[in-house]
Length: 89
Image 1 (cartoon, rainbow, N blue to C red):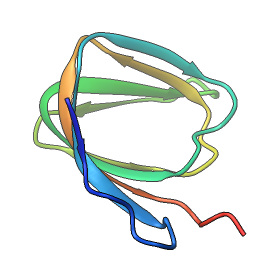
Image 2: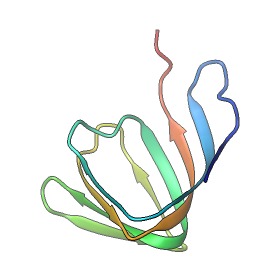
Image 3: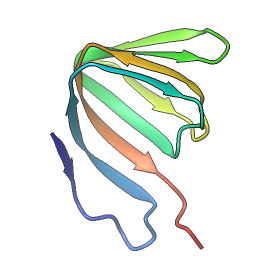
Image 4: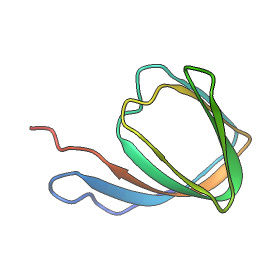
């Protein structure tokens, strides 16, 4: 489930709710935008390229910076998210 309202004209902010099953992703090319999210159910483990792991559980929030590289691992979760990206010029 992914619920998104249309982006504003400058395409800077977007938000919604997302529900996912198991996800195991290597993010080698860099995270494409800034994202803040709040986990409603489940948990997500983010491990950066240096090996530092952070577990974000239900009731916790985190901001991922644009360009972040690492591994995203979850057995399933629901999150409320807000992203920020600069509009293409």
